[in-house]
Length: 302
Image (cartoon, rainbow, N blue to C red; front, side, top):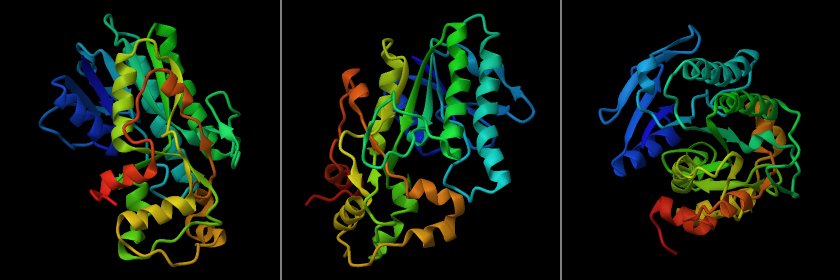
């Protein structure tokens, strides 16, 4: 199988690329920068100038679409919100416009999405049929998914993986939000009762590959581990995995709102997300429990 990945140099994309190459399969990258990986063929595109090197599609079976500015990288100013939307919608539209002109089209597109699409239900179990939220993150994610849905109109199988909190020592949640735990300053956020639906990076990568090869998979699937935990629990377990103390009081919600602005809503969101649909599709998790996931990431054993 041959893959084309957008956003290939990011945390998820680089790990997917590594697995594809390990499996002795081919991979192309679509990139807007000069970042290179000598093991893959890189092709350029510019979503703002509507430019794409159509050679990137040659013999490609599956597109893995990850491109999009990082939601939690910067404060949500008016300009940043525009960038978050355009980086997803324009990139998807450019892909679609190029692919629909191809005589030999890819068979499938596996696109990233996010559990932020759902309305905040706090503790109620949420599945793929649950209500879409009405805040900025939900609107952003919904627009992204709708743009990806266009590929169905030209006979391409579409899978959208709604990704939860990704656990990896190389980036994401553990590097940004939980980093103080390494120095003995672990502290829960807000009231600590928010439900955190997480997934180990290895399971997420395997899920993308599984979806690419399973022709029966179509539509949306939650990319989360089967056993979500509270923010207090994940904070304590991270400290424990690192052999660090946990003694500090929670960080109040108002301080998070002062520091992060509107984006604090993401940090304080409580989402109890079901993984039942992806499991029924035959996917097997390697890391179902948070304890074993953290032990693997930090290479510890309790």
